[in-house]
Length: 96
Image (cartoon, rainbow, N blue to C red; front, top):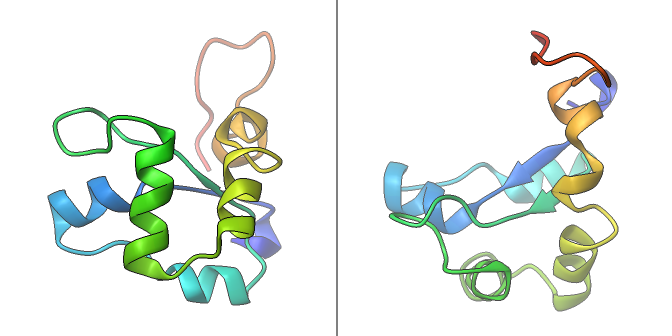
């Protein structure tokens, strides 16, 4: 992912609820992949960002400093172009 300049938007609680596990976040961190955290949809995700961060802290041992960076300086709002390859002025998502 890093070599392709693709970031990761992580929703650990929803992943755990729906699939029984989530991505290997430790491997992504070691590979220096840019990671943003965000809650997923309501039926399986957290009620909000703080709950999602708390879940990641309790279940995956992500430090509070790292979580703040994932939620702010590397937030999903900063990644739509690099993570989804959205072209400004274009109304469709490009294939990766």
